[in-house]
Image (cartoon, rainbow, N blue to C red):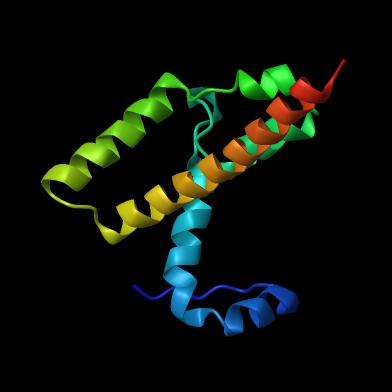
Length: 118
């Protein structure tokens, strides 16, 4: 499918060097826009919003996956074991791995702060 659209010059310049990745960029953008925030931390935006509220170290340590997101991850794991992941599934998995990495870093720092406080 071919799509023609007008975008600001600065975005066009940024995309020029990434034109081969444009389908992936659009897929990730669409996934992020259509993520349902009521199902839990389905995307990076929700995690960033959580951290923007400057949670206490204990609140960071108490952060867990929502049941819906846990189910989605378990579905991806099962699909990987049985039929294998599609390219879209692999990108989604990488997205979740990145978010998990950020949360682990935050939890490590939160634990250190709790251990250092009087």
